[in-house]
Image 1 (cartoon, rainbow, N blue to C red):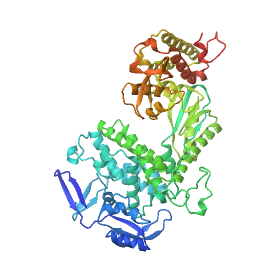
Image 2: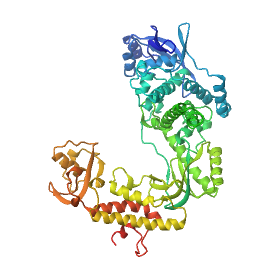
Image 3: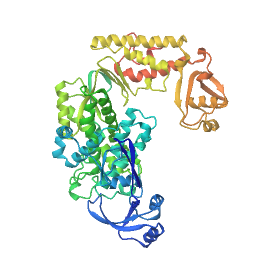
Image 4: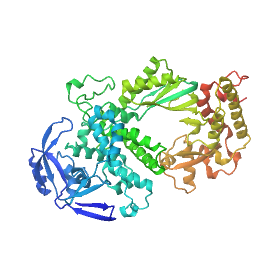
Amino acid sequence: MVLKFYNIKTNETLEIEDSEYRPYFFLPHSLTEADKEGIQSANGKEEVAVKRDLFTDETRKMTKISVYSKDVLRRASRVFEKAWETEVDYGRSYAYDHNLVFGAVHSNVENEPMLSIGADKETESKFDELFAEIETSDQLKYEQTKYWSCLLRQPVPQVGSEKLGLKGATAESMHKAFMLARIANIPVLEAYQSRGVSDWLKSIIHNYLRRNNVLIPTSTELRRGLETHRVPGALTVQPKPSTYFNTVICDFESLYPSCIDSYNLSYETVGCGHDECRNRVEECKEHWVCTKRRGFYSILIGALKDLRIHLYKPLSRDRTLPVQERKNAEVTAKLLKLISVSGYGVTVRIHGLACPPLAECITGYGRWALQTTWGMAEANGLHPTYGDTDSIFLDNPHPSQVENLITIAKERLKLDLAVERRYTLCVLPSAKKAYFGILPNGEPDIKGLTAIKSNSPNFIQKAFRDCVKELGNVRTIKEYGSAKKRIVTVVREAVTKMRNYDVMLEDLVYSVKLYSDPGKRLEADAKVTPQPYQCAIQLLDAGQKVARGDIVNFVKVRPFNYRSKTFTVKPAKHVRNVNEINTEDYIRNMTTALEQTFAPMNISLESEPLAKISDWFDS
């Protein structure tokens, strides 16, 4: 093993060689004859090791097998019936075992590298002030938070990026690489190039368990012997369709990381072996959670979350700090958030991290938290109108009621609830995950509505945005009534323009991704071919390569015969004249999209008995 260190003072690279190091893995202490034969064929060296079992918290004797080739290490899981830590990267393994951290400052003590992790008194005092609460209530998380804080507060070396192999790195990307290297304990170059959050979390876990002499479980043990499967997701409360004035949206700060932290959700704590823990199933019906041990995963995710919320997020907004320092804090805060919020996703199906019971517990506690908060809001005189994953919409609440709800949530749920957004006007259709609101500055905030989806043509998107714009300055019922009339006018004008062909062809283009092989659609003898594949077939006939996953651009035209079938679209570049377009089809699509949004607003023409928007356009 050759270690490389960069000397800041001399601008030189120092290499330290350890010729004694060998990659290793573990076998059961009582070896089978097959194990002994495997060790002999691998030219392995065996010795007794004592490790702590993650699930029982008891020590157990293991047989440590040192080998002379990383290839042997990789093959070990196939050669031996039961082997542990065969998938731990052998280079990182050395760093874990010797308390070395990539990208961090080390000192040379008797020609042995030693991690320098101390902080000056002022920095340490500020840290203790920020995290005084967890120092007394959660010592293990406090220690991990302080460990990472000391590493992250070390300055990034002022050295040319090419010297470190980071060709073309900017100051921001270099800072991010060093922060990630220190958090996950992976090489700086790898941190600079990697986009695999699951790999970062795996290294974080392996590093922590090795530092605490815990045997790293196999992927089968982490899964509890189960196969990965679909995990019930987040809760979405059916919206109460209407138009609301003064809507306050409260969000849980990092809901899933907070659930992992606050409710002690970890690989070894979910469904633990203690009989006295089995009765605590109020929050998650499927699994109980240990009350006797602090879970290591909850410590790690909790420390990442707390560093972001209590240290780096405030630093990034502190106007008394230099601009570059604020930018660095913002980069670090975003990195911490990315890793912590990924803490749930990797437990669903990532090899070496998946644990279905843990994943089910995380979403189960998330659903319970939202449902409980909804009930608390109603019990305290508030009027919740919609809830989605980590958000609850409150209709015209008094500020004191909101503050009271935030306080109760903190006390009862041990979760941080905060005001995320305010809408002067909010329109909730009946569909979930689709609404829009007007921010206090008059700007619209639009979520999930059909009219503004990326595959909708500009014609429909513009009509919708022009309608919403009319609501920008609405503050009273009278202003709201006037705005609804103006919206009717906007829609009628759009219809008139379409029927008069007063539109640009580029504003009528639909862009849709192909999820099937267009060649197979061409071979299929179906009576009706979906419009995206009508476009793809025409492109294929024109000699253009089109495959699954490609995005096709087409325009709706009057029906025509093609390959003995009725087609209703053409590739955008094949349409030469605006008169080819099917105006009524565009009007129908626009009205359908607008109906979804404006139905709760009860927009109608006084002269018309019907309230549907589509009825206006025929008049």
